[in-house]
Length: 78
Image (tube, rainbow, N blue to C red; front, side):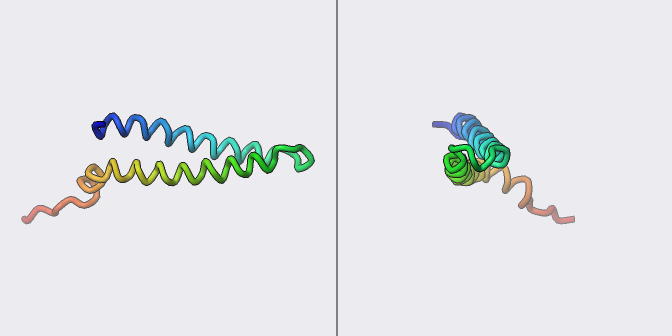
């Protein structure tokens, strides 16, 4: 798989993992503790957060050449 195609797939999963992490936290905070399912939301938040970190690292690895070219430019001699 080419890098650009892989990035498109990774970016989609990165956004999905972020949304699941964020929404599960919002619902976890909004739902009263008396309602069942609170533990499920906590587990979902934890799992999606871990997946988000892993996919984020893959995203950085795939974009490393771009990061290197932007932030680690060789300075021109005057």
